[in-house]
Amino acid sequence: LDELIYTPDVIKQEIKAGYNVSDIRSNKVDQQEATLALGGALVPEDARMDIVQRLEGPTTVRGRARVLTTARDAVEFPKLEGGDSRYISGVRVTWADAEIPSDATFAQTNFEMGTVKIPVHVVMARTDLSLNLLEDAGLDVISYLGEQFASAQRVDENEQFLAGTGGGRPRGILGKRSGAEYNPEDGVASVNSKNASKLTADGLIDLVYELDAQYLAQNPVMIGNKQTFREIRKLKDGNGDYLWQRGIERGDPPMVLGYDYFMDEAMPDIAANAYPLIFADLMAYYIVERVGMTIRRVEDVSTVGRKKAAVF
Image 1 (cartoon, rainbow, N blue to C red):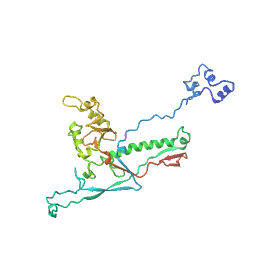
Image 2: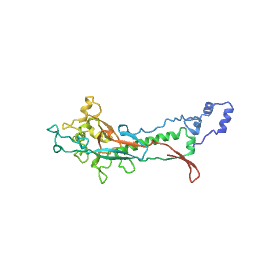
Image 3: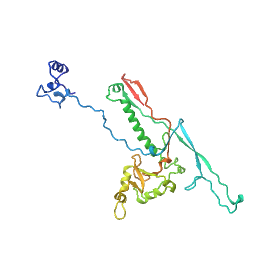
Image 4: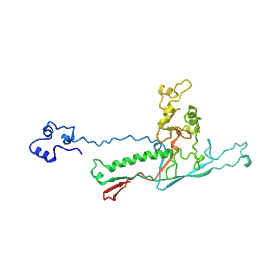
């Protein structure tokens, strides 16, 4: 620890003698504000409560998906079966050549119903604080910690909404893309870039037109991380000109193939057998939640007898 030349008792005596703080600081030639041991401790620092911290990463899904609330631990939806790229169900029509055709001239068609179940999971966070910190800190630690919990939850849930595999957590859009749990009936198609380790212009075009025409009209967006869009930005034509630069030079908005894009670092990097880009109408993704985040303060006494507070 730095040692003071003037003790508190000496300072009191100087003040009683009629000196003010400026007098005490300049009373000796060797007293310096910049050095604690030479009187600088008499000049307190300007302590601010504007905390220096990083910016929160982007969260893409929640603000563009369909968010529902429930009081139960799961929500079940009826699902219309039998549709394809054009028809919404198995019901079909038959053109008849008579006003009252016989039953044999057209086949009976029916719609079939299934169910989709979305479970509601629990996410928690815990931070242990000493009671001394809570009582002596120069800001409301509980409120500030609540902001940190909320920020961590936003970032983590966004990652789950994109890549969560289910099983105690949300199942993301990428979800399980292989293995026993992969279900082609989920309707999430995949497109091969035609290169084992990088994106191609043809692959991007295939990705866009993999969606059926009616969904292309719903303003789908493209999602990938910064590295992925950097590689897209570098794509060139046969003359060595950047494909993306042409749109920028015309003053076009920042789009890829005419669609908005969003950078999200929760998306995987470009690699073999990876899915670095999502192109989708996010309103087709459902988020179901039961209650918002709550903070509970629990006081405890540790084994060494020092009180602490655990904030959940």
